[in-house]
Image (cartoon, rainbow, N blue to C red; front, side, top):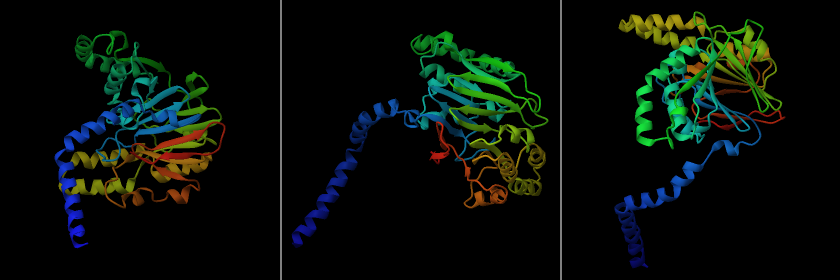
Length: 358
């Protein structure tokens, strides 16, 4: 018995040493089995029939370990659309196991850098991974043409390199880049249909992000389910009008209390630029509590906060960010991060948080 008690630990120890010494070989064997499954997996196939919203970027312009720049996916049947394309969002699409090569179009809410700076990467990944032979449509208010022209020019050298290297199989010239589809910004109380295919209807409406103009939000309807995306805006009665009785409101949110802590620190260290920015941004964003007031006024079933400003990097900071939300809105609220996925089953009533994050 004593000998057995000695032999077993020695055997375990030797097995561990052997496994460690062969770890490279073991990893290769595991990857040989795993990579094909990873490359062929798609989250969309498991979502079922309905309207689904996946957050590929829940943050604002500042670095955030859990939130890339503003970016979300709309999944409805075989349609895959992106709303805004902030930095880091396109790469998260792959991490979330959605095929970026299948993106049908990008819809822009406005032209602030943190909502468009991932467009070049989005177009390139779609072009080189999806056998696409036509450019990626970019739908946005008038002015989107200039944005698209700029990205196409910036990536023109890359177009030549990739086609010369990979040829038409991977990078056909006809599929390169972006193509603009502009619409006039609707007047208050009016909307503009920007997508109407295969039962998916998306309408744009104006929001208040002055001095940024144009700026729009989007209402999405599919098989009896509805969602509204605010884009960047101060509290907006026009948004409340178009969000009336929707299932899901995805609303931006800036915490004045947390931003003013940044302002105080900037003043203390003599950083005049940050001190001014932290004052300037207060009047053209909604606070989380104001987003909750809009959700209550519009009688939406579920509120989701995104475009989180400032970054929430300290434990408990989310509690400060959400101050006043529960008092203003009596429905469920989700504080999103990259990888959050909402599912609205066709012709149902549930708003299901399928995945909380990456």
